[in-house]
Image (cartoon, one colour):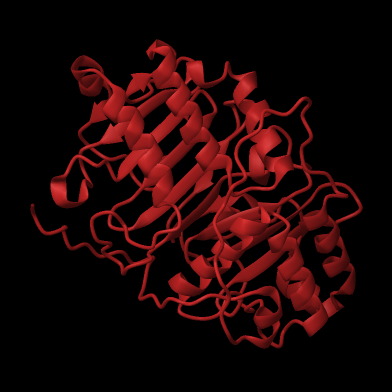
Length: 354
C-alpha cells in the first residue's frame, strides 16, 4: 500500500477538532456532543420548496431589518450585484472564500444579530446534522463556528427576491426562500471536512461525510466486471467542474438506468445518505428537480481511479450526474463535496477558486 500523495491547496489550511452548540456559539467557547443521524430521504407527496416564511428565511428577514445603514453597506447587496473579480456575487461558489470581511461572531454584529444568523444557519439542516456542521466549521477553521465565517444578503427580504449566503472554509451555503427559480438550495453549494488533517488517512477517520462514500462503494461492489470497467474513470474532473451538460451531454461512468433492480436500490440508498443532512423543504426540492429531468434513470454514476487513497479500490472520489444534477464527492486529499441541482440544465454556474 502506497503512502497517500502529498498535495498542496491554496484554499485549505490547518485544522483543529472540537465542537460548538448554539449557546456556546454566542459565547465563543466550549464543546457539544455530536449525535448520530437518522433522517433519511423521503419522497414527498407534493413539492414543498422553501418559502419566505420558512424558518431560515424568517430569521434572514429579521436580521436584515435589524441592520443599520452602515452595516448594510458592508453585508447587503442588490440582487444582481456584480463583483469586479467574482462576477455575479450571489451565484459565486468556492470551497474556501469570504463573501464579506466581518466574521459572524465579531462585534460588527450585535449579539441579537449573531443569534439570528445562527438561527438561519441552523434551520437549513436537520437537528442532528446542524451539530455536525458546527463541528465541521470549527474543525476546518480552527476557531468556533462563526469566527471565520461570513454572510451576505442579496435583495430585500420581504420585498421580492432575496438570498443569504454563508461562506468560509469548506462552505458556500444559501438560504433563498425559493426566490431563485429553477435551482435547488438557492444555487450551487460546497461543503467538506478535513477531519484528520489536510491529507486524510485511508478510511477518512472522523470524517462527517465518509459514510456517504461507503454507501456509494457498496454499489461498485455489486457491479459485474463489465459494469465496473464502465463505471471506473481514470482522471478526476477539476474541483469546480459541476456545470450542467444537459440531456444530450456526455456523462461519465455507467448509466444508472442500465443497472439491475438491486443495484438501483443501492443507488437510492446513496441518494438518501446525500440528502439526509438538509431540511425537508430542500430535500423535497432536490426530488422535484431530479424528477423533472427523468429521475435517477437519466443520471450516471462514476468512480475515479485518480485520488484513490492507499490504492485500495475503496473509491474516495465519485460522482452522480444527470442533465441538471451534479453531486461530486471528492475525497482526495480530504473531502470536498460540490453540489449543483436544477430543474433546467440551462441554469449557468459561476464557480471559481479565488
